Image (cartoon, one colour):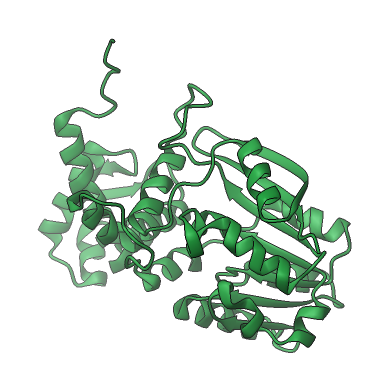
Length: 333
């Protein structure tokens, strides 16, 4: 059998490792944000209390080895082919939040278990600069007239805020188990003056019947979960089926919208396209003990059916880096 060609050569892998660590440091120190104005390195160094010589060499290395940074003149650099928001998000998430767990995965001879450490502060920092809401799900929820929404794994509450700003009758509840995410969500809600209609509760969704009282649960007419089921792609109590059964028990007959992605690693390839972001997400999932989600709609449909739920509609979306979907699911009574 012919061996597939290597995607990265030996020195390219080393360059990439060094570059990723340097970029994360520049994001966290604020240097990357200041590059938008293309200041001279000496000015940049003074603003960030950095050695100008060392900073120039770091930026020079990145300009020579990546397309994130461009050399635009003597002592001047700028952001390259990606937006500042995208660079900050991807590095805070995959390197900052998941970097240590991936390092442990590399040194392990067994699959990580649930609870493997993820840097929640870094993850919250990643989402602080983006509003990861699908315009498709927004249109869907508004079109169908949902006004009492539970957002499970709400993160910084971007969806709830957007819905409430659009509709004065909308009320929402967000649940997230991250202290940092809940703090950020409450701050955002307070800043836009929606504290009377939006509430965020910290807790594990697997304990949803205890987190939310029966009166609150009865008033919910739909559930939304973005990047929720992929976090439960393990087995037993950490399986998506177990989570779905808990949601079905707490919200019998209700509609749930799950926005998630199709896994790649360990499954038979469905395409020759290199879904790089999917593969990176899969490794982050493995490293954090979450497991790799199914790769086909039929597998997801079977998963719902086994949990006593029914897939009503599905929309698949793909770009050059990832395949994802919106599933409308009936939590059958």
